[in-house]
Length: 114
Length: 115
Image 1 (tube, rainbow over the protein chains, first blue to last red):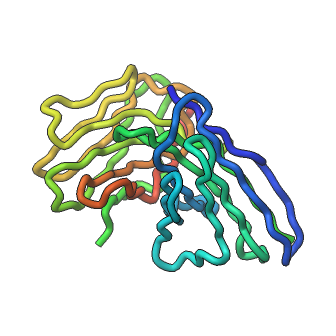
Image 2: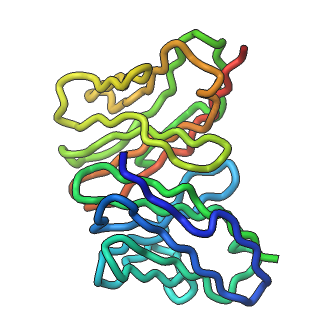
């Protein structure tokens, strides 16, 4: 199946700093990429949908100025958590979609803000 | 209203036995897709099986089968011959044509396979 990578897999940052998470589709061009957040033992919550070359669409309640999403190419989307706080600590998962129904998920990034 | 409902927070099954994980959904869109994903403790989401709303037959993928009851709006996952490696969280998800690309996920079922 299609492969989606995320980098880094784990990151620890200090409160007030920004951290960037990359999502790459390795063997296909992703017209659409999604960013999810997952709290421990909870379901995935869609944060935003990004289409290559256009602005991301954020879900209700997600601060677009805090969670900056850039989808600069058909194989790369980035999520930047700006001025991170401990409550931003979570598991962030991206997924990519080529054109059909299926989404391919990345392995996730565990963010810890101290 | 919840789009996807998984009523079993935790399930246990004996190794080599079959287990059914429940999933019901709510939609008025005639065109939709139903998915099951497995999430082991490592965190990655692994695609298991897909069922389209217009598919006449239940989807099967190896030891996984989807019991699609359209009138009841249920899409239960059946895992046959359970293996220890099947222990994980399992999520049911739905995508509606009308809402574009958005996936709706259930709250998940934690499956533990007992040796």
